[in-house]
Image (cartoon, rainbow, N blue to C red):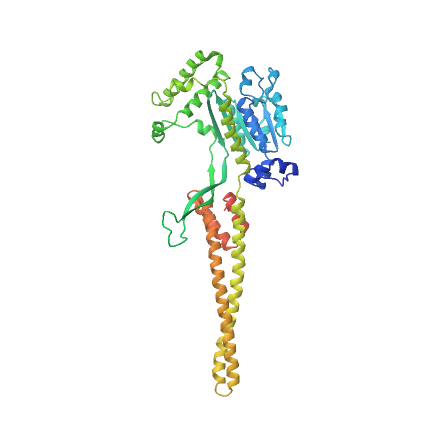
Length: 448
């Protein structure tokens, strides 16, 4: 998540992003407006990612590419003009990229990834990498993890594409639709006495680095069982990545027959290396992986850009506001209950003294007796009124505590094992101490 750093939207920005603000709220748009994004590789996929992110309204986008624009790029790379063949792909994409949204600062970097220091990548909030070798992807991913930055990568070969996301430790909210039984009248039955309600559930996802995802040991028995019902796409991606690592390029459409044979040889080597089932990766999967099909780039680019936006704006303002409201109710009701308890004790003590006095007055002064009993009746009415108030505040307290319990249960479910118990214990202590900000902090980060 990217903090908004007190970013304020201008009137022009509020008008430009009006539909988005209606969708995910002003605070989310402010956080998005504070994001600095680096896009590596300006192929057709890179152009799709850049288009979507620039239109979303981030603070800045840097297009990084050291490659020259080729004729084959023009089939899917719509940001680079056809008359710029032979020039740098990032620089040729600048003019059209800037025209998409003048409110976003779009720049270009023409150096190769290997020529840039680690400190360069650490200046961005989110990095999207395409067209890199596995070693380069792992390096950038590790830099992001060391600096707590979000990392996404992906690629498209022909009609085949993939994406990977490492958001490290990411919290988000999800709306779940539930069916609730409601009895509106005597004619309602189980079939019609139900209504649909939406609840927001807080989730947490712990991501692994790319290196771990690519070095899975598929010889383990628990993973072997997945292969029987699994999809071979992961292994197709490994074959195509291996081709790029070995030849420093993607398969060439002009050499389709020769390079299909190379891909099939690499497939056979991978199957033997990982002891995969025979026929698991069929020949047909490696025949349409040449060039970049614009439709495939649009789909994968849209998914990656969507994840960038979600990573930038994820937060739980509704739950945080709810905690503050309910804790305020509990605090105010608690103060009221303490005051009423003190008043009740005082009046009960006075009532205890008035009853004997009224009984004693009956033997010598009827007027005095009547006055004493009037005082007793008045005190009794005040005690009954206080009892009704205490009952109402008790119900109000129980409702607020129940709402808090629901929110904090959701926070606890984001952790497992001892960490879940630690969150529960920390929440109980915060409620007991009437510490609202501690509760909000637990909700946001699980700090205990």
